[in-house]
Image (cartoon, rainbow, N blue to C red; front, side):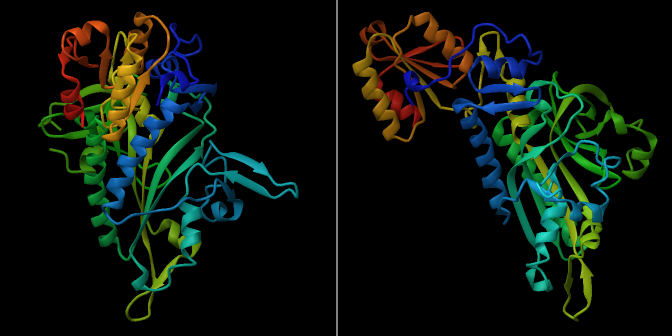
Length: 413
């Protein structure tokens, strides 16, 4: 992409209505536009990051046999009444609306009920199971206070996966497998070393669930964890009952408290939803059995925000290569003809590149490059060409190096 064609512009000053670092950096860099508190538009650069995160998730879920689909946002009241979750006393962050004929609808905050109801059309026998399916869907949460930038939104993209298993044991096998899948996802995104599998309250689903919490100063949770023994508990659930239920050996642990942000969660649903909505199957003997379920969520913009909170310096963002909008930021200092050739050569090698071909001062180009935070920067100038090539610099390093043009493409390929 040529930067002259990018309609977004960087902003020098922090937006006055943002207090969180992620929102400041992502807004200034031209990644997002704030429509209102908790509601953000993803601009071209931001959408590229979102899609990179989605693709990592997609690849890991496909690898365990999950199938992608997409459910509707508008939801029928009847299905939610069967599980008791239409009641505002049970779920207090519904967005509800009506059709012209007065029929009440909800804008889905999750999709257990909807998908379970759909599966009644496709599951009748034990031969039809297991089913693992997921989606990337816009969720709506009527939060009383949307805050912390993209960490707590009223409208956001969620990856939610659901398993439909023959038995409790088969479900639990998949549930344990998903813990490992989530670890792979967060490792690939670049936050795995700061992310802990965390015991937490199960909310409306079960007594307990497991969250994936990333150490982050902007986070709204407090993580109590023992790094050596690799155990973590959400502070809200740090009590004697948890220690008893999970057989945690307390005096033997060196617990530390730090702020954290939830980036994912996994829930055991049992047969609560299948029973409520009448989803059953016939076993080998023709007996009717309930299906055991689990749900597994990752808030995609929340992950993006956490990455922004962790990977930055005084000059701007420093994207991990796996989720960066581009791999290379190519900057031309009055050497557009030579830069154009390198730009085309990089693209031919399948290297994603943002080419700054704008007619502006060098200092402004460098400032924008640091703020946007693309992993590699190539500068083509009269000075670099006289020194034998182009100037290559990693965003997270202080020093650059002059390298032959042919070698730089090979190095980055």
